[in-house]
Length: 341
Ligand SMILES: N[C@@H](CC=O)C(=O)O
Image 1 (cartoon, rainbow, N blue to C red):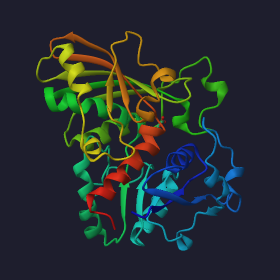
Image 2 (image 1 turned 90 degrees about the horizontal axis):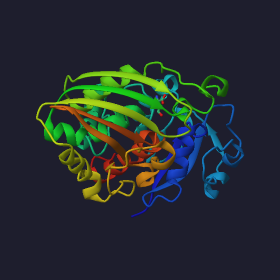
Image 3 (image 1 turned 180 degrees about the vertical axis):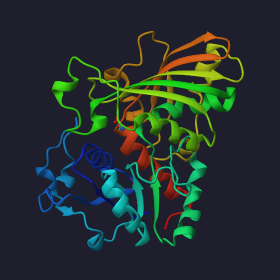
Image 4 (image 1 turned 30 degrees about the vertical axis):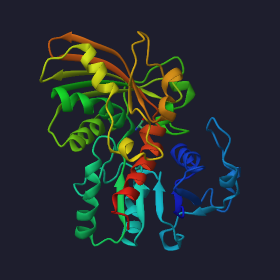
């Protein structure tokens, strides 16, 4: 098939750069343009402060950065959005009204009932909400959201546990990387030699998004912290299960968990979305965040604390599985779904 033309808005930030990196050799999408705020508009993409660990893709370097303007968007098949949520709230609905397919990282609209909040392995069927969205809002385009990064890293390993054992209560404590806050988000003087036990709005996002994704009024408590790690959010997770279990069975059910993206062979789908490890001192951000090319969640320290009380530590790449990678996987699912505009 001809490649679908992709456009990245908010392309100069950390998540925007991840989109550009992951779209570079994508078999279905061709990055044809990028947009950002007035400050960067008119420059070549190659002139931005590229901060990812691999060189900037050469084709992207040649693109001219457009000023973000809904009135002069190019004709493209899909827009990947990494806009700040206050900007996204203004422009994304207008893009969808004008017929664009928008796959967004921004937190606005995530909880609206007709907006799919997709982790493609966890709630692929929610994609069909776009039918209701278009009918209700009179849009010829559509909006799909990906959840908050910490929500995604929690919900992926939770899914097989919930399906097989049932869950009555969840406690989670996160240790989140600095890139989650953006390039200029946390000053080095604040985070080096330190831990910050508060991330604005994060705990509420984990609770509310997880309830929406699992369609259950789960009892869930979250404490979110920032740690001096570059990439990779680690989460200590405590789950009260409905059925009792043994640890080996939990390792096994996480290891064999597969879903629609794996069945369809979607290009960004990792072969194994949840990878349990038996090493006593893993997962670790530096060693495990690139598992499954940054799309797998690595789970360790799987323990039975008491009957029906499970504990484990999960780690995922916050700007790949937690952001741009999950959004691209959602777009791939949309391509295969027949719901494409
Ligand atoms: N809200 C998250 C973003 C994910 O990377 C954070 O602050 O870490």
